[in-house]
Amino acid sequence: MGTKFKLCVNNKNYEASLEKGKVYRILPDTEAKNHNLIRIIDESGEDYLYPIEMFIDVKIPKSAEKLLVT
Image 1 (cartoon, rainbow, N blue to C red):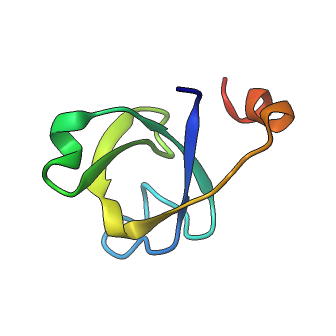
Image 2: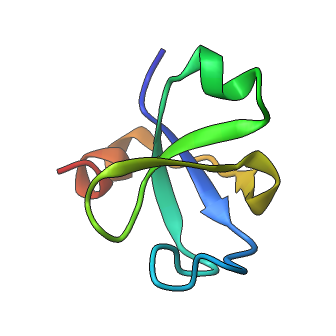
């Protein structure tokens, strides 16, 4: 499985951590998914859990992925 990304469509209550309309890298976390949460590398540069309904899937071309992963 390659790197995955999600688009933030709702940052209510997380305005300092997430930007609405921004693409974020996700990290696999099966336990979080079982609780309807997703692990996101947010504006702090660290990974945290957020409600999954705040994000939608987005496809990033492989050629662009390396620009988003640091």
